[in-house]
Every structure is written in structure tokens, then in C-alpha cells.
Length: 159
Ligand SMILES: [Fe+2]
Image (cartoon, rainbow, N blue to C red):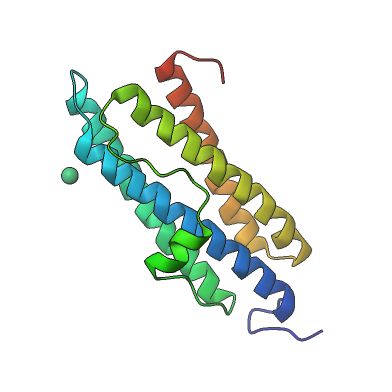
């Protein structure tokens, strides 16, 4: 078995980095959704939601960089064009969303898609004995599940 510089199977690392690129594309769409609702939100809850969405996109921006740098660490090349993001993203596109409930629902729907992708990556990272990616996915999943719970609490809906 051919190993890469961090001692993982080169071919299995390629599978993991390809999967991480799909996550990267979806995270970029999630990030852009958050920018959109940060800008366009209107109504009596403007001030708190405007700030909350900035907090979330700042966090998403950090995670985009972490995913891209993990791909590089595994020997891959992170997607960096809008074309690649568009052709690989499944997260719904939020356009012209200014109502608070629609904005929060967009976050829940986006995170649900990210969580599904991240859990699938846990399987390929386990197959590659890639603890670095595994730990990153575990942290993302735990945080995002908590965010979904808070968004569902805001919506006064069952999780
Ligand atoms: Fe702003």
C-alpha cells in the first residue's frame, strides 16, 4: 500500500479529500446563504438576527478554510471556483429571503444537508484510518446539531 507523507494510504486519502471537496462546495453555499440573510433580513427582530447571522457566517468562513486546508494536508486540491461549488452543492439556495422564519428555516435545511454529508465522510475517513478528518467531522457535527436544536427552539418546533 502506497503511503502519503502523513502515513495514510494515498488512494484512501484521495477518496476522503474528494468527499471533503463536496463538503467544501456545500459549505460555501451555506456561507453565502448566511451572507444573504444577514444583508436582507427585515422586521422587528432585525438587530438580533443581523448580528446572529454574522456570527454564523464568520464561523462558517473559518470552517471553509479548515476544510480546504485539510484537503491540502491529504494531498488534494480544494475547489476554489464558483463553477465547482455550483456543480457540487446540494444545500438549498436562499434567494431574496427577508422574513425571519424563512431565514431560520434556510439555516436548518442547510445544516441538515451538511450533517448528512459529514456523517458520510466519517465512513470514508474511518476506512482510511484518518483520525484528523474524523475528529474534524465529529466537532462540526456536534456544533451543528446544537445549532439545529437552537434554531428549532426559535421556531418553536419539535427537533
Ligand atoms: Fe455586515
